[in-house]
Figure 1 (spheres, protein in one colour):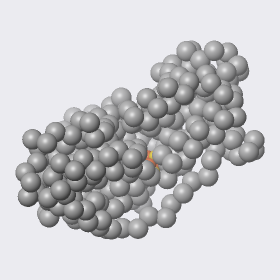
Figure 2 (tube, rainbow, N blue to C red):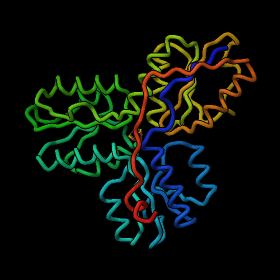
Figure 3 (cartoon, rainbow, N blue to C red):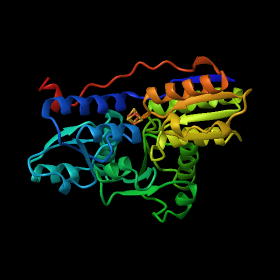
Length: 309
Ligand code: SF4
């Protein structure tokens, strides 16, 4: 068996920053510490922090008055910020700057009188936060079918934005459908899909022709991890999205397979290595690391923490 380890894979700059923020906040303020939504969409990480006394909440009302709350990498709407203020919470904002950039674009377009079409997945934390920046000015579409169903005036003043973790190829189709139906629509110079999402997808696309099976480390509610598995499946190969090595099933592999291993932007490297170790010991796999693109991106900790460190 041969393992091809895709690079880049795993943690992106936004996830690194969010996790370090939570670690530092725990050191500074101790437990219990509250986080609005999952800090990142990864089960092992959420379980690890839960064991350390972090309480993940879906409503600000669940946080006791005056306590500390950290906003996740996916961002929050102004309404959530206001709710925290009204409860005297100490808020630490670990929103990824690339999500904040989309929020700012939404505010700008809304102020200029545009109706904004957001391309994204309904119910995703990031989509909820972005839509909350311009309530009443935004509609959500998930795919080209939704674009066909859009009932906006043909000459409406329109702009589009996208979620940061979409499939690059699928987003192109939806944006093209929008441009066809509403030629006047404006948008960001490029879509808002972030560098980390694009690079991880590019690595899978480039390396998958050499593989028989694809293993993606990441959680089912992680949008960018799901997209990696979909890209692999789209080539007709078996692709498995798993959180940890214990979920790996030997029946998925033949001893002569080439296995492409990658990880979503929120999946810890230790679980990648645990899978590699299992495939080494059970199938005698040899590992080849392949770099499709270099990444040198990092984000500073939230200001609320920087002033205290
Ligand atoms: S996947 Fe992209 S947008 Fe999301 S946290 Fe990472 S860098 Fe930021």
